[in-house]
Length: 313
Image (cartoon, rainbow, N blue to C red; front, top):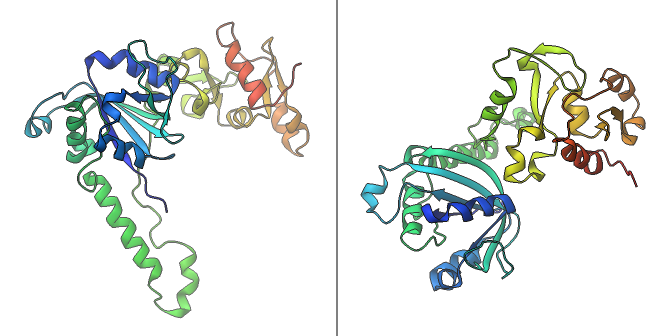
């Protein structure tokens, strides 16, 4: 297993606009004067695709290590690098080039984070970044308390698998002895608020595809344009959301077996017609999508072209 490196960067009050741009365009960068120090070159040189870059905004600054441990970070942006560091001077941010860059995708955005959630080492790494003009910093220890606990559990699990035990029980090794292991869950931080905004207090809601009125727990709040392909602004745009029931509509749309045409009508895709048994499932979907509007049309167009693979040329 390839180890994942986690680097921390602090963004002060003056960097909020740049942070929003970086999130929206899936990139972060450093000035040459910051990146070209020996220590920062070593950190940047160690980063690779799949590593984590965590951006902390407000709450720390140039303060003592002891004071930092009692502070709250206003916003924590957890990202995954989608490639290796590179140099580019094309215009992204308005105030400087920031030529040393990393491509990334946002995994999670948290608010009001303390050391109890991310560990004392992570807070200290952000503090050291704040004291060095937002340079990338690695935790000095072995990670947060949660990471240490998870590492111990994984080691226990490895030992249980490697213990031969009774040869007659060898077939039991096909399944782990403990089925519920603790693990990190990268929650979709915006999901709860967006769902609340869409439901508006309703306990029953119509599916936008089949139009059935169902208990809210049976209807997902789904992104029209795939969330992983959406920018930060697109992810939080209510027009990029639809209500899709778990009785089949959510999966049929997500995997491109049905699509919404430019006039809002719903149709089976070409791939749905080649799979026996999907015909019955598709037939229960309605004729018109109630989530299709002028504001959401662009998102449905993206889904039509990229997920349902419909060629309208």
